Image (cartoon, rainbow, N blue to C red; front, side, top):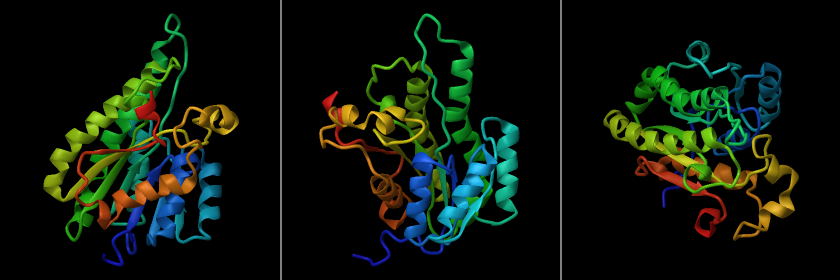
Length: 256
């Protein structure tokens, strides 16, 4: 086996929603795997800056605060990244939102906020960064990794209608984008996480004992579980994984 099969040495990465939760797990993993520079973005500048400072103990981590929920914010992030790097090896579309409310009262704004960020932004941010991705892909495959959810694969009992629909849509969008961008030596794939403790998944964070009782392997996902999956897809090891969604959930989708 090549010694560098899972190495990210010399590569740059941009991770949206990188200040906390799954985005932070992936950023730390990329740095440990040797990435030359990891850029993290988040809506809250103070949190983004603080995380970048903390992760800088592992390597070069740079904060690029931006609200990518609309076209203007996407362009702000793209311009900020371009001021640092001419190429982009790895894009992780992780920024996301959720909305839970009963069927009878679920509002339109609960659709617009969630679908815009979870489904539209991965498409339009990738589109806006296609130049740097293509430049990187001239020498080796560039990577786009979309962070979906097992709620886009199987049905969660919680009433999160727009979230489930957006993540199912993202899985299909990953397939469609992958077929087109493979022509440019850009490999698109996705990860569908299960229970990882975060502000997004407060049940896994605050009710771990109850949640892990429903997971076949008997535990909540930890940082290395997510980092390992992302490193696999981002590295040479994942070059032939095109359009697929890697489920990282301890077996939950098979047990539902």
